[in-house]
Length: 524
Image (spheres, rainbow, N blue to C red):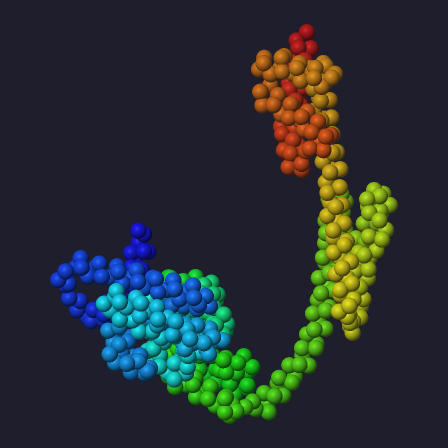
């Protein structure tokens, strides 16, 4: 059994045994007997869990509430006092199944009654929806939420894990900034019951900055945000889940300004958010918004109306930006291919003309219609440069993008053609340079004869290194492979690099021979 399994068993035992709710844990008189009873209880609980999952596949989570939190449920919820020492099973179902809860509860209770015959400890069942849990928060019964969040998970589709990581992170933040945390609020898809085991949990934290005097508010906000983010990884590790917290930190002063200015993001946050910690600030705002008392000022209405006008200008600007992107998107690759061909880098204006001269008229590798696309984009950019009131429509942008995609696809094919031609010339030139030099040294003509003579009379006699023979054979092999269309650009580059070594050695040998001949002539 792994360490994780041991830890889960320990947690489950603590969830099932009310003795762990006391500070002092008495030593049991018969530990073997208690252990057997505990193992038996765990097996029966597993049977019950499997029954619930099989019978009601839509269930979001099944957990056991910790014994130390039961007193809060007895005080705040409709839970009988005598259930304090019961096993409290907490089942969460989707809100759309709310009307079926009596039926679901009845079926589970029947199964519990069957199991109860072989169990000493009784089971108390609670079936709730996420909305029921959010109502607990809206009533400021945060102790109940904490109990649900830290309950032992028997089964979870993601809801319980997301709640647990938020609760643990909240506890860490409160430990550090207790008196400064005004509200800790969760929002987003998690509240709608759409949480999975990997989904993000949106969190808003409001910090009281009204009594901060020694530090600029912006600096304070950045420091707090950095410290709060440090707790995210720790909370995920403690919770043992893959969910991630997406945190927004607000200062109370800036939050209040956003409320006064009727910021739509803040209004949505107040309307939909659920506090899991609040110092009497968030809930009054929520109630005032529900009552229609939070209304935007005339100035904020004007501001948002002007935003619509600005949006129109922004859209026009972005259309122009799209045209500029399309322009550079076709121009830069065209310049690159001209340089790959061997010409010097062209200017923007020269590029269409050079593309036509080289690849249409001279090399016959492109069609005139394909260069027309480049010419069209360049002319459009010139219009923009010379017209201060330049405009372009969405339909024209769509046409430019479509043409650009077709042109770029053709340029990729052209690049392959140019590289193939360049590699062919490179291999032929390397082969020619090496074997022309060798002909004068070894006094042979055919490729096979040159290689054999070089090996027999020059390499084996120590005039050249074995490496030179290997390079010579590789060059001959590379030319053969390239003629068959099997050599790639990397292999051509390797052949070129190695050939330079052999050529230098051959030239050096020739020079030594010529120098020796001169010395002999002088002596004679």
